[in-house]
Length: 213
Image (cartoon, rainbow, N blue to C red; front, side):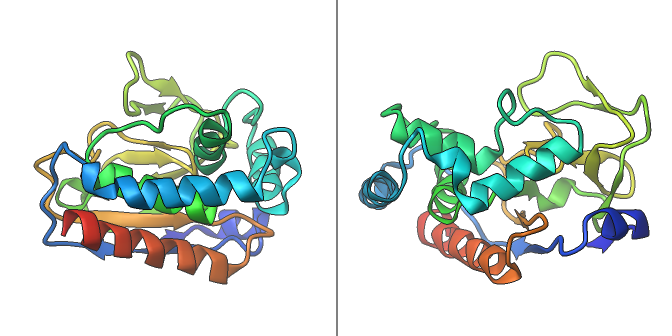
């Protein structure tokens, strides 16, 4: 992924891990993951509390990044924190399909947000850049596109914006039952060690191969 110079200047230490994970067979049923999910849920419940999670250094790093790009993390949570909070609140995890559910488990376990795209729907390599005021982004599940501001960080291919970094992916490139290859991005921010980001990517890749391979 190309990171434009102004991104690197604004966010020194920002690191991503990415790659294609292919030969997948994606089904609606993710029941084979139940034992793994139960194990991760127990680990989260033993490690965190709902009141204390906002002060955990890893989640604090993403909250700080959100504030810096004009997003209120008390209203729009970093994806990994939102999932962990569901676990701690005793709410069921969302179920989409065996691939999305698999990398969501990796995000919960690692604390790192993960972006995923249907690789066959991407037009060339990704670039990380600042948005241009007024650009529109149709995210997954949105009735109307988001109107972006210039301080927001986005991922774009050669033709379209595919994500608001690091919390919302494009509807046009979402993972479906027809997806065969996923382009996976483990999303780092300043103050998060590159090793943690790589480990999250590797864990998600392993879960995808195990449950959708």
